[in-house]
Length: 123
Image (cartoon, rainbow, N blue to C red; front, top):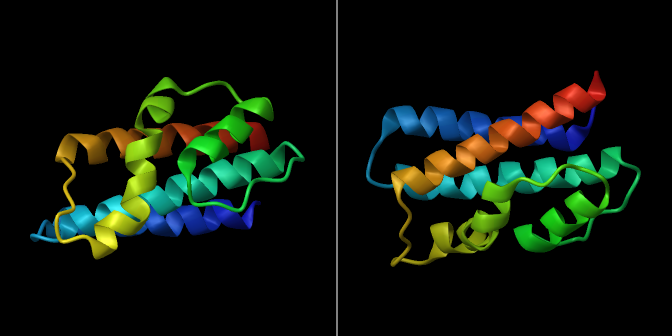
């Protein structure tokens, strides 16, 4: 199995754990880890198609490579790519970081769909 898939699952586990804690910084931590998880799933998906992924944290070029490698488009990811990319650094360093619980929920749904596709591909 793809090592990146396993690492993505660990990031996702952090999100699930922190959502239960629900303290004032939980959203920042969740946004960072769901960004990391989505990034890793995109890279894993690209690798599984025999392609090389770009060495970037930016979701848009990873998503473009994902689609070009033969995966079906995921409209919500395309719409949220810029926002999710911003979470990689902003959630950790900017005091003015802002995200909504709905944005996080959408990102979690993106993660779940990407993981579902990978698991189906591996079967």
